[in-house]
Amino acid sequence: MMRSIARFTRRSALLGLLCGLVALAVSSPVAAAEAKQKFKIAWTIYVGWVPWDYGETSGIIKKWADKYGIEIEVVQLNDYVESINQYTAGAFDGCVMTNMDALTIPAAGGVDSTALIVGSFSNGNDGIVLKGKSDLAAIKGQSVNLVELSVSHYLLARALESIGSSEKDITVVNTSDADIVSAAASDDVTALVTWNPQLAEIAKMPDAHIVYDSAKTPGEIIDLMVVNTEMLAANPAFGKAMAGAWYEIMSIMTKNDEAGLAARTNLAKVSGTDLAGYDSQLKTTRLFSSAADAVAFTQSADVQKTMKSVAKFSFEHGLLGEGAGSEDFIGIGYPGGAVTGDKGNVKFRFDDTYMKMAAEQKL
Amino acid sequence: MKRLINLQPPRISAVMLALLPFVFAFFAYVSFSNERLVANPNDKLLPAMSSFGAAIERMALVPSKRSGELLWWVDTASSLRRLGTAVAISAAIGLVVGIALGALPLVSAGMSPFVASLSMIPPMAVLPILFIVFGLGELSKVVLIVFGIAPVIARDIQGRVREIPRELIVKAQTLGASTWLVILRVVLPLALPRLIDAVRLSLGSAWLFLIAAEAIAATDGLGYRIFLVRRYLAMDVILPYVLWITVLAFAMDRLLRFVGRKAFPWHNAGASV
Image 1: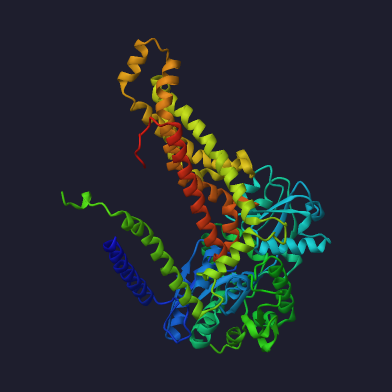
Image 2: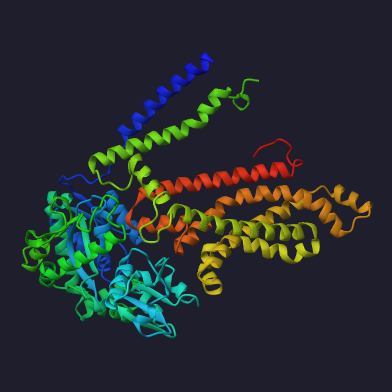
C-alpha cells in the first residue's frame, strides 16, 4: 500500500512537470500586434473572391508585396466556415467573408477585425426558390432548406419581413451548401434558399422559380477581405500591398480585352464553370472594380443601416454569444469615426484608409 | 519470467494508470485555455470550464427561447432514435444475409462477391443518390447508416459461420437435422454472440454516418447542433456535445457487452474484449 502511494505521488509530480513543460513549450498562436514580414491570407470559392487566386497565380500579389518588402502567402480553403474559424483562431492574418459572418464569428469571438477591402455585394447572387409556385407568399407553412444562420437565413428573414410574415410561419431545415443541389432534386424539398453557383443550378430545374433574391435588398450581403485590426495597425505595409494588388487585379479582369477575357476564363475554371457562367455570376454581383466606388459605398449611411439590421438578426438568433444582452452588444466602427452599437466594445470596423489610397493613386 | 509482456500493474496503480491520460488531457486543456483567455477574454476556441457549465445548463435545463424545448434532450432523443433504428435494421440484415452467405454455398457463390463489393462503396459518395431515392427526411439518414454498416456486419457473420467446425454440422446431420434445423440449432446460436460483437465494433462507424447525415440536412440531432453552432464557433456547446456522444457510445458498447454475456453465456466464457 505504502509503495503504491509513494509511486502515485512520484507519478503525480511527474505529471505536473509534464503539464508545465507542455504549457511552456507551446506558445499561444493569437495574432500579436507587432511588425512582421510574412503574412497569410485565406480565401474560398465565390464569384467575388476568386480574383484573389488570380492575384496569386498571375504574380500581382507578389509584385505588390515585394514593393513593400513583405511576403504574402495566399491559401485556398475548401470550407468557408472553417476558413473563418481558422482566421478567428489566429492561423491567418486575413480572410474573405461576408459582413454578417465577420460580425458573428471573429467580432463576436473577441477578435477585433477590420474590413480592409469592400469587394462587392450580392445583387441577385442569393435567392429563394420555390418549386411549383411563383409567389413568395406561398412559402408560408413550408419546410425551407437552407444553411441555417448564414446569409441565406438572413435573406429569408428579410423576405418574410417584406410580406409581413416571420420565421414562425415556416420550418427551417439546415442543409449543407455542398449538398443543396442534390437535395433540391428530391421531391420532398419544395422551398430553399441558397447562393450562386448552386442557385443558378437549382433555378434550371423544371418548375423551380426564384421568388425573391438579394437584388431586392441590395447592398446588405457584402463580400469583404477582413484582417486582424491590431495586426493591420502595426503593419500598414500589409494593408497597402493588399489594396494595391486588389485594384490592379480589378483593373485587369473587368476589361473586355484579351488580358481581361483570359483572366476571367481562368477565374471561371477555378470556380468550376466557364466564361459565360462566370460572367453571368458577375452580373448578379455588384463588384466595386474602382476603389473610388468602394470608398463611396463604405462611407454611405446605407452600410450603417445594413449593419444595424444584421446585428438585430444575429442577436435574435443568438449569434452574438451568450454574453450579449442586446443587439448593440458589439460596436461597429465606420469611416469618419461613427459607431453603431457599444462604443466601448468596437470589434468590427469598416476602414476606407487603404481603399482611399488606392483611389487616390497613392500606393 | 521477468519480461515486459508478463508484468501486471498492481490494482491501485492500474486505476491510476487508466486515469492518467484523462487527467493529463484535462490539465493540458485548462492550461491552453487559460493562456488564450488571458490574451483575449472573449476567445471562443478553448472556452473556460465555467463556460461549459453555463452552456450545458442553457442547452439541457433551460427551454429554448425559440421553440420552448430542452434542446440537449431533444437532440439526444432524435439521434438515438435514428441510430437505434438503423443499428437494429443493420443487425437484422447482417444476421440473415451473413448466415445465408456462410451456411449455403449456393447463395454464397451467387452473392458473396456482390456483398463484398457493396461493403466497399463509401456511403458518403452515394449521398446524392440516397437523397433522390429516399428523400431528405428521417428515412435517408437511417438508410445511410444501414448502407454503411449492414454489409460489414453481414461479412463478419459470414466469416464466423464459415469458422464453425465442419464436424458440428456433420454431427447434426447424422442426427437427422434438416438444413433449416442445422441453421436454427447449430449456426444461429454460434452466430448470435458474434452479432453482438460485430454490432459493437460497427457502432463507431454508425455514429460517424449519423453525424454526417445530420450535418447535411436536419432540424434536430446531436450532429445537427454541432454543425449548426460551428457556424459561430461555439466551442462551449460543441465540446460538451462531443463528450456526451462519447459517453453515449461508451454506454451503448457496455450495454451490448452486458447483453451478450447474459444472453449467450456459452460464448467466450469469461473473456472480455
